[in-house]
Length: 131
Image 1 (cartoon, rainbow, N blue to C red):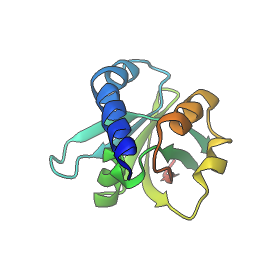
Image 2 (image 1 turned 90 degrees about the vertical axis):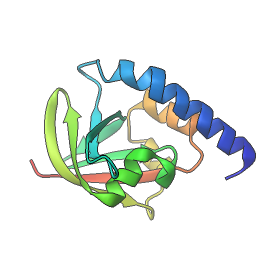
Image 3 (image 1 turned 90 degrees about the horizontal axis):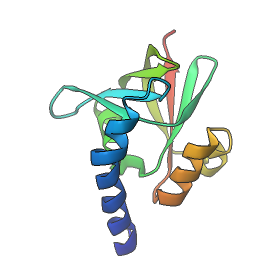
């Protein structure tokens, strides 16, 4: 990661952690991804933009395996996803062979635009939903 990308990553993640995410989590329609903290064991809820396709939920991480929720998934792939106010359990899988830029075209436009704008290491994630 270049020095510019590192500074951008730190600035954006700080803004997300302390401002955007706490506000977004309160919006009932916001899709949330709940992982288990790899160190704490506590539930961690992250607002995400994605789309359900049958029994799968697709999203793109803007920082790939540098994203805290991706690190949590690698430690414990069991997750929950809140879609339209309903929680669904599932198993998350990073999909590095998928083209994340092409995947963004099928996801919500507003979130996809932000991921393209601020992302430095895009990574597709698929959640296989239990129900």
